Structures are given as structure tokens and as C-alpha cells.
Length: 317
Image 1 (tube, rainbow, N blue to C red):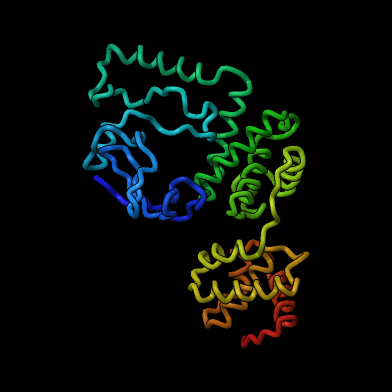
Image 2: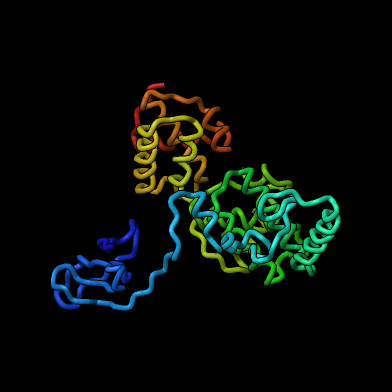
């Protein structure tokens, strides 16, 4: 069995997957899995031999069969206090074969579950992590944040615990600040108001804690841009791609003329979307845009006047 060696989409061209032949400089390379060799199709030079097959030794013809034959568990994750490396006894009272456990053995299984739960959390730090990461998962689930944002937030919170930055601060406040920082780091911007609405901590406290953590942990985060909010706001307003492209063009020109500096990114993004929706014939009211963006109608009107006057935009209201 042979297949042509191709680089995955978005791969780094410097990686060995996109290696070239040392003899003829051709990049048409073939893996020979039977011999374990990497061969150049152009001149036949063997670039590598005795290659190790990293795949499984078993075959599966459907997802169910593959799940039965795999011998590894779930990957480790930072969103669980023990990184998911400890065992867990389920609550279904069934054995590994799916058969019901006899009644005479259920009391023993209950005691095993209880002690297993106690053993997983053995000290104050683990108790803190268990509670905090549960809060993190709850807030992230309410905001529909992707997995990479949760993992990054958990990593930031663990750093804060190791540096003893949570002393004198509420756990949920540090969790919310970690989530806000991870959203900015992963280019999935969320406003402080959005995070505050899903937690019991106020906007000011989250912002204060976030600034303290970025200073102590030396987090290098770039300021959010109005363009980062366009796609999400347009999606929530159910606007077409034409409006989104028009809003991006408006913001690009406004950025070139330095009209966005010193302005709140959400307010500028909301004004650009409002202008684009009117110009494209899919008008949304200022109130509708303001509710989605989390700003006031006055802010949209002020940014709207600045953009139309400075960019010379003609908007037929």
C-alpha cells in the first residue's frame, strides 16, 4: 500500500512532512508502508528506511468497532483538577459488559464510589481547583465557548493558583477573569458584560482582577479590534454575508484613518454594522444592534455620526 506524501492544510512548510529529495530537490515523495521507506518518485532515492508506523495495529470498519478495539481512554485535560488521569466509578450499577450488578454487591460498590470521590481530592489546592474548574465549565457552557478557550482559561487559572494570586479574591472572580483573558488570547472576543451576565461577579470586579492577573502573570494580550466582533454580531442579527463584508470594509477604511483609536471596539463595530445594514437594504434598528452589541443607542449614534462624516458615507434613512 502506497500513498503520496502530502502536507496537511495550514501546515508549516519547514516540517519534515514537506521534505524535499536531497538528490533532485523534488517534493514528490511516497511512503512505502510494506518496507517502511520514504522514496522519491522522481529519482528513486530512499530518503528514510525502517520508518515506525504510528497508527494502531488493529483495523476497524466502523465507529462502533473502533471504539470497542481501542485501548486508550480520554485525553488528559486541564479543565479537570486531576487532568483526567484518575479513574472514575460510574453510577449506573452495571459491570463492564453492561449487565446489572447484583443487589448484594451494590452496597460495596457504593462504598467504593464514596472513597474514590474522597481520594480524588486530597488537599486544599485540589479542592480549590475542583470547585473553580467546575465554575469555569459552567460559565463557559452558558456562553457556548469552544474547547480551546476552556483549556486556555484553565491553564491561566492554574498559573494564578501556583503564584498564589487568588488569596483575598473570590474564586469565581478569578475564574471569570481567566475566561476573559483566554477569550482574548484565542481570538474569540467576549465583553466583560457578557461574562458578568453568566457569573455572579460584577463587571468592575472582573476587570480589576483581570488587570491584576495580566500584570502578575505577564500575559501578552493584544487589544481587541472592532473587526473581531463583526461576524458574531451579524450572525446574531441574522444578516447576510454581504452586510458583513460591507461592515468590514467600513472598519478597514476607518482604521486606516485612525478613527477607531480611543473608541470602544464594540461600539464602533455596532455602528459599522448599522451603516452596512442600511446600505445593503437589510436595515436593523439601532435598538436591535445595541442589544446584540451590549452598548447603548447613544453610543451607536455617536459612532455613526463620526464614521459617516469622516468617511463621507451616504446613508439613506
